[in-house]
Image (tube, rainbow, N blue to C red):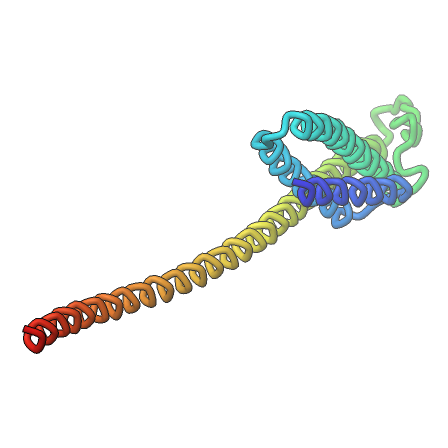
Length: 243
């Protein structure tokens, strides 16, 4: 159980160090966040294994001490997850502000005036003998609406890209978590294989011992039979020559 405790303690220190590095950065990468998520998953599984070992502890004092350690590690796990959520939200806000500023920086400063009708010419009364030029006025009136439509479309496109980036980050984090689980399962299978090899070797030694005992038993039986025959033969010779 001490080995499991040392493993959990080492993982706790490593996660705390990784979170400190993430908090010190302005914009951590999704790979770094995913790596910490994988470490948290591994830490949770190691903590569950340590808890199971504590439940099977025979000495009450050691069991109580192990339960206190498990409680402390559970609190640290909750703290780590909260810190990681804060880092994720901070990164999302920074990324959103960066994308928004970049999007707004692409438009000309006076592309959409505050008053859409600022460029419209004042309407004047025309006589029936004067031609009316309405095409230029209608074009200038619809310029603001077109800019607003383009701006709305750009915002929708930017939101779509943001959602896509978030989905990709989630997929990367899940993939890293699955990779970490596969690594742990590989280690578990290796340990199981070693145990099976040890059991097989033990069974092989036991089989050799059993075969040696059986061979010795057969030899002892033949020695006993030969001794009985020699004893009766000696008795017959003594009775035959002394009588």
